[in-house]
Length: 101
Image (cartoon, rainbow, N blue to C red; front, side):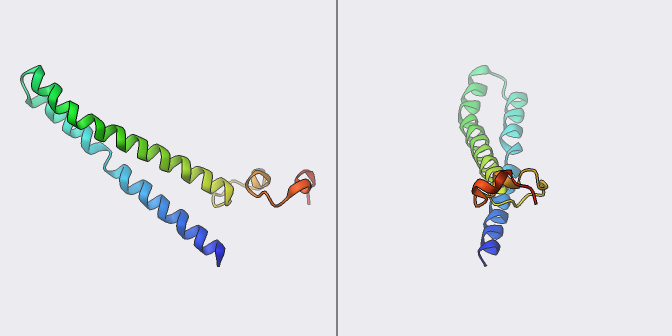
């Protein structure tokens, strides 16, 4: 039951990460459109001034969500990394971490 809830939370975070990163090219396309359509530097700078915070927000969101996903995958052993990282992912081994079965 708990494993299913953890897997569902992990899958939800993967969806959120993919969803928000799908919007990532849009501000860059706006910047390219701005650079090729506006003729004066003043208008270009004003337009880019409003678009750059969106880019920084998306970069921060994507980076933080990616870090959270990689840490969750490591802690809950949701990724297929093999047995060599299982000792780091599961803290219940305690002193028996050096023993091999």
